[in-house]
Image 1 (cartoon, rainbow, N blue to C red):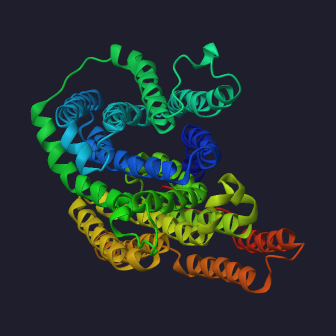
Image 2: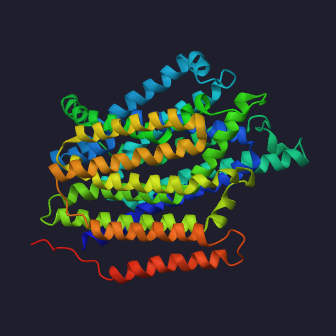
Image 3: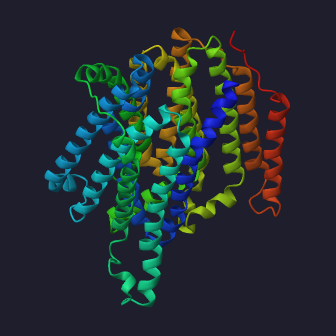
Length: 496
C-alpha cells in the first residue's frame, strides 16, 4: 500500500481514539466556562498544567523507547514487560510520596485548603502513566480499534460524571436541594468533582486493559531496562522540556501577571485572567487534536518505514501534507472565529486575540515533531534534548519578559517564539545528520497563501459586515482550490 495512504488510514483510526475523546472533553469547555467562575476555571487550568507536566515526567520517554527496542531487539513482550514494571513502580512511588508530603506540597502550590485536589491529581497522573504504556503496546500491535474503543469509553465516563456533578446536580440543587440525586453532591465542591470524575474514568481504563495483562507473561529484564533508560534519558529531557514549553506559562502565570491598581483580591483576579487564557487556549484544540492523532500513528510508522529504500522521500511527503492540513485548520478556526468562540463562555471572549497565535505556535510544534525523525532514527536523541532545553529557556525567558507587560498575550507569544525557534534549529541540524528532501517551495508557498488570506480577512472584512462568514468562506475555498490544483495526485517512489 502507498505508505502515505497507509499513514493517513492509521491516523484516521487513531483519530477515533484521540479526536472523539478530545472532542467529548472539549464539550466540557462550554460547561466549565459558563457554570464555573472565571477564577474557578483558572484553578482547573493551573492544576491540569501540573498534571500534564508530571505525566510526562513519570513516562520518562518510555513510549518512544518501547517502540525503538521492540523493533530493534525483536522481543516485544520482553520489552513491554520491562517498560510496564518500570512505569508501575515509579508511578506507585510518586503517588505515595505526594500523600506523605501533602502538606508542604499544598502550601507550596498555594492550595493549603484543598489538599484533596492535589492527591486526586497525583492519583490521576500515576494511573494514566501506567495505562499509557499499555496503549503504546496496542499501537505496536497495530490494534487501533481496541485502542480507540478503550479511549472513547474512558473519556465518555469522565464526561458523563462531569455532566452529572457540574450540570445535573447544579440544576437539581437550585430547584430541589433535598433531592435523593444529591446524596453525593456538595455545591461548594464543583472544582473537586472535575478531578473525581477524571480519577474514576482513569480507573475504568485500567479495568478495561487488565485482560491484556492476564494473557501476558511478564519477563522484565534489569539488563534491558538499563539500556532502555540510557536511550530514554535524552527523551525524558525532551519530554520534560517540551512540557515546560507547553504548560509552564500556566504554572508561573500567577507569579508574573500584572495586576491593575485598586484590585482588592489579587489572587482571585489573577486566577480569573488565567481562566480566560485557558479557555481561549482551548479554541486551538483542533490543531492540537490533529497533531496528537498524527503522532500516535506517525511514530511507529516512521520507525517501520526506515527499512524502505524510499524512506526519506516518504518523510518529505508526509511533512508537506501535514503542513497543508495544519494550514487548513489554522484558516478554518481563524476565519470562522465568530462561530468557534461560542464554545467558551461570553465572559472569556476578551482573550480571542490570542487564538491565531496559539494555532500558529501549535502548527510549528507539529512541524517540529515531523522534523524530529532525524534524531530518533539515527539514535542521536541527545540533539532532541538540546533543542528542547533551548526551547524551554526561550519559553521561560519570554514569559518572564512578556507576561508582566502583556498578561496572557505575552504567554501566547512565548509559545510562538519557542516553537518557531525549535522548528528552525531542528531543520538545520537535521540537514547535517539526516538530510530529507522536504519540498520547501510548496510548503512556503502554501504557508504564505494561508497567512495572506488570513491578513486579507482581518484588513478588508469588517466585523460588522453582514456577510462576513460567507466572505471568509470564500477565502477558505480559494485556499483549498489552489492546493487541490497542485496536489491532485499523491506520488511517491515505490520500493524496488
